[in-house]
Image 1: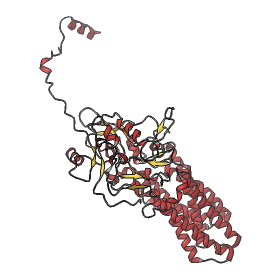
Image 2 (image 1 turned 180 degrees about the vertical axis):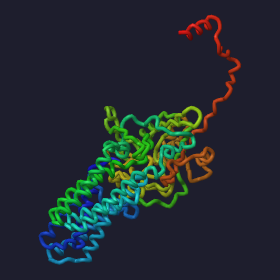
Image 3 (image 1 turned 60 degrees about the vertical axis):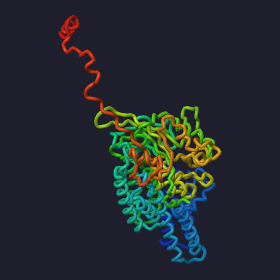
Image 4 (image 1 turned 45 degrees about the vertical axis):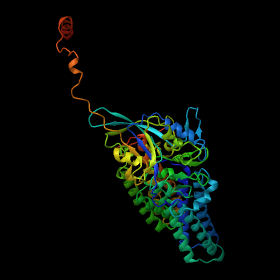
Length: 304
Length: 248
């Protein structure tokens, strides 16, 4: 899948923002006054920047409000609702600590729940797609949620919780890659099933329907840079998990170390998210002669 | 609404005969031509006369080489377009309600006025049936020529999808696949029509008829007895030449 910067930024930044807001909603830390204003503002800024970035990949962003109508069937619509509800609840909740010097715990807890629901809905936009087997696994929502919570804990300066969440996120990231690498094969789609010619012999793509690139190849048969996947996985693990853990240890739980760790963690999550798209193979590639699966499929450059 | 309707009893769709298709791409041209000026925004092209020509099409014809266990390989031309699935994943993912399946005849359509161009439906389709129009920023897909098949301003014989009407080989058939007695359903039953990627759980309406098995090459050539057998050991001048050349 094409790793569009808009969706990579969207999932990374809004994940961090909603993670931070979830911790603030739970009173971890229970800030008041100016520090509270700073904390909530940072959470809102990250979440909103992410949401705004996501509109950049729309063909007709002026109609974006229509995306609130189909919550019965569409995870994208549910995500829009969850984001608005989470931001509204957290906005209301912020009024207490910032202006009145007191916290409304129930409102904060509901807000935190809505923040996590938003991250879950974001992950389900991808998880629901059967045509991309690497995304269509149980590990995907767990991957999104743990990274969001770990990043939020770092930003909120909750060093002990952050360390535990980072370790958990690291394990789930490895699990995501492990299951993801086998997902295409397990889905059972191949050139034979795609063409329905399995009873007639071995199927090989002979000639493409068009000489130039098209939307499908640009959007769903993206391959450039996949050969650097192993290196990027190491970067994602080092920057996303191991580096922040070491920094937390060095800093002894000091706020500066948590924030520095958050910055490095964000870079690691960006690498992980880039791979999430770049490594994902869509079954439509089978029509264009891709065989699917990492190990047995040497990278082929598709123009465009 | 992007929830799916109850399963329609009438299911309009295509049956594509891979035995007959000659890969001429006439259906691609007819489709582009009709839908350029019909339903919704035109199918835009980008630098159509440049080096990187690219554009929006609703129908594409691939070619595959199929090698049987015995015998020579066979070339199969393979038109690919929307299959108007019963469980269309492209419909339920749509956040705006622009993507919908009609309860009356099962046709999957896009209301372009409501489409925000997020592209999620194209991701959800295993068959690559949807292509974003770069110019208009809305999703395009096969409409089954909904503006032809019910169009009483057209002569009766033209009230079928442009691709079916134009196919010079008669490889494309249009009809009601929900009716087991329709000509297309009979054809599917008779020829063993198949679903594409059934493991994706989309339950496509369109069916593909696999190529008929080719005759095996006869073990004995019927013309064999009439031909002069090739001499295993040449005689005369040729025999002498053969012997001299063998000594070199």
